[in-house]
Image (tube, rainbow, N blue to C red; front, side, top):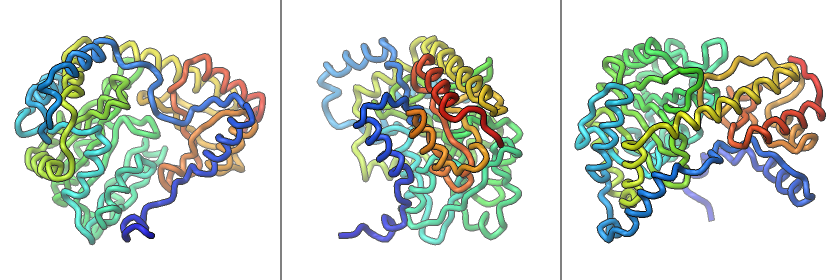
Length: 390
């Protein structure tokens, strides 16, 4: 029994071979240190958990929620957005609650793409951008993110015929997997490009709060014209260590938000209201937990960069996210180097090719274990493979 034609086009799971090796190593009693999964290891802040506990006891939250989300939740989003980015959102027309930002990113393709259309997708990038496109029968056009361009897509290089077929432009800054930031000038170029070709910008801002060295990522919506041509996806997962809670939101262009809300009303039953109450507590409460978390990630980032540079890399410290993106040594593919590190050092890293063809030649390390384990992992790598060449 086979899936439909769209399912047949989905790529195979590229990490299957490494997962089999990981399983075998664990069966043999190897103490594997996994630096592969971008899932925060620290607990959700206590005040958010307490708000959830109170909300669960409220019978009003035991019924079906609305697809758009509680107005009180959307107001909390608007208030937080105003404080954080200086942008005034209409909570009734410009905000919709999501079952995590991944859900909204996948579903936006169903709202705006048809067979024959194209979506402009960053490569390397979060796989959901292209998967949503493929599932709706449209075609992804992969925009290379290269180191020499600051891991920003060069919009001028997109062929004219592709730009005219495109309906969506996916962006993600701070960027997974590269850790790159985008500045106001880049967003201005993207807005002008979207205007010229009648394209909706979909900015994945899941890492908006994970920044180091005093930097503050900006929002697409705070740049002039951003709300006219774009929407932004936000998540509680990384900002508040709430990956399992499945809560996020989309905001921005009112027409696009209305279409996404209408789609969601037909395919899901909204976010459990108690989870939304917890989200309100996260957004309206103290943000010190974010500052503390960023300090932890910065320490871990520094440990990774220092450890790799000791082995022969010449990395600059990424300004944000929970990842370090690094080139593989001479003579290896991203997959073969990941296998070597697992076999010789008992350390899991993610091969860059899993994020697209232009991710080949790189690997990703996630900063989601304690700094002592990161240092141990880097020491194991050093003992196993020594100095490397590029």
